[in-house]
Image (cartoon, rainbow, N blue to C red; front, side, top):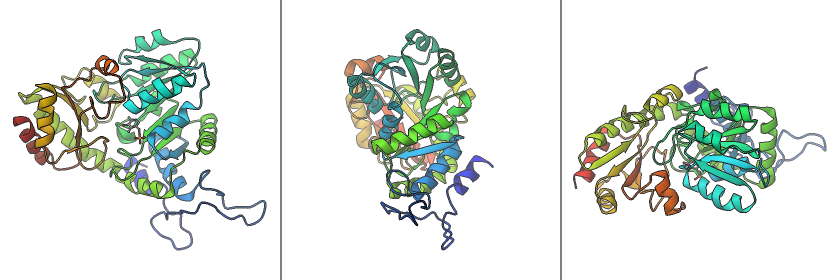
Length: 379
Ligand SMILES: *Cc1c(COP(=O)(O)O)cnc(C)c1O
């Protein structure tokens, strides 16, 4: 069945007592046993919960995996995945990954003995050159945040296979509707479900999706052992949100493309970062690797911080807020907001300056978004 159909019809029809169309929320922390040998598949909600499992089935299906484990945040999903490794193991990641991931890697996990190299992953040679005998994994995030640089997933998984290490992809920015990393050879996918999968800015959550038995078992073990699973209520909201993922992504992209073209022509904008524009250096790769260009974009505003501040003041449809992937448009300033946890040197190295503004384009009518942004920029 097609993606949109699976999104609606997976993880439902769970209620044999009353035939409710919608999977119920089971907030119960514990489930009783019929006798010492028999329960109905659940015993304690940290380890497993019917509502959470229904949502996990849905996302596993959308990514084309065999299993999904839902966590309480995207960072919890990354934390679970990183516990596959041991002190001394080396992991290669992009130098412009999500700020929170960078902090976890460069600070917390480095302090616990894992080793990281951050490379410009746009050129796969940089990955090859960073390999060491201790390299156990390559962390792929594409498109990157906030500058929308792409990584050629198949080229990196090829290098990993050759070296005998695994690849983990953070697929948050595009969602499985627009990019399916398993089809390019990735071993494990993580998501912040906070973003497009839930899509309504009312949950913080994450998940780890696996495609083989070994990692399926290990990830399930880790999420339970570390206590990272998401609540039944959050799982229920994500299951509700994910059903409209396809139509939402279409609407998000329509607005993003229209806005990118307007920004591209506006005299107050020095540069637009959106893979849907033909001028974007990774435009051809995006066409090959993705089934759409997504709805995140960034731009450099002439005049730096004070000009950016005027834009934030004047726009009314773009709320000044971190996060992304919700139905409402958001605008933010990576320098002091989403990427504040990076050092200034690391930010500059990644190309994030005081001119950079990031936009998460919602599903409002593109004409209204364009008119609003134009007001902001004309000021
Ligand atoms: C938001 C985000 C995360 C972290 O997810 P949380 O739900 O905020 O913990 C990780 N990776 C990417 C690409 C994100 O956008």
